[in-house]
Length: 389
Image (cartoon, rainbow, N blue to C red; front, side, top):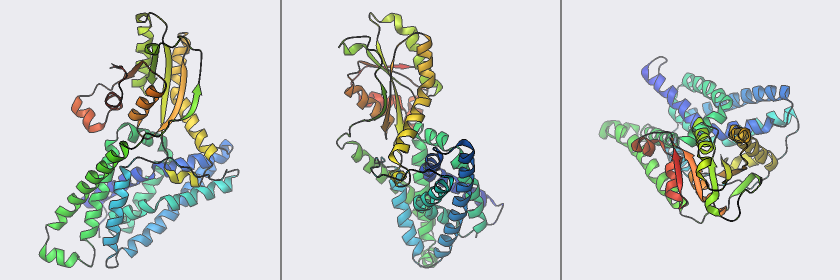
């Protein structure tokens, strides 16, 4: 049992918060979608009571899971499930095709939030029960802290994880490590391991982390080489074409609302004089694919509205800067699992002649570790790419 205030307690608390953040992003999106059609004063109440009920229900179910994991062999089974959950984190999301119900009242919104959180949190429950190692105080404290954090910062967290894929990789590795710790602590084998193979306490968690990252990356790479799915465009404003069929004058600016992407817009404004003819400018925003389970609880129309609103919000400043300079543009919001591949796919489909985008100015090593959309676009397209620092 982990004692309160010890280094092991604080480390396990950080692990619980980290696991919950990595695994709960889409749960928080369901809360936002379930309340989007309500009046503002009811939205706040629905989010509060829905989150409160979700915390209570998740804590209760995780307490049950912690109790059950004390039985022989269940930790071994749980460790296998946790390895599977961790590998799934590294695979591309599939677009949902189901049709959830429209939500028209505060009671229906709270009910949707509660049911969705229970159904979509089985992976969280297994992971957090494993990390807690039988400490109910740690479990309750960790969940009570992490769930509201995820709910109220969900959009920010999803954007950070999309921009820095290394966070997902580290989260998956953490779950693999916890799965290894879980396996060696099972009552069925713990005594024998302690007496005859104590080294497994160190080796098996590390092996679990390496297994998850290795298998997950291998399966993700195989998924990438499958046949390319057609782009799903949520918003596309045709605008006024400024050129004929000369594709070299079609210029694409990927925009995610960040200061870096806006620097590319500013650079375009300074580059206008370089072109013999006015370029046809396309602003592109890529929205990350939501988990397929989301469609079980909210309507396709609400999901489309979420993509639409988030995309236009991220495009707003770029459009405003071009409008104020009198520069016509076309804007597009599309759905994609991997931003770099989606940008390259869009460029091919729309006959783009040049891509202009900004880098964060990191070193090649930092880009390799943290992930770089610009580097990914260079790898996936034959279209000339101009990078702005």
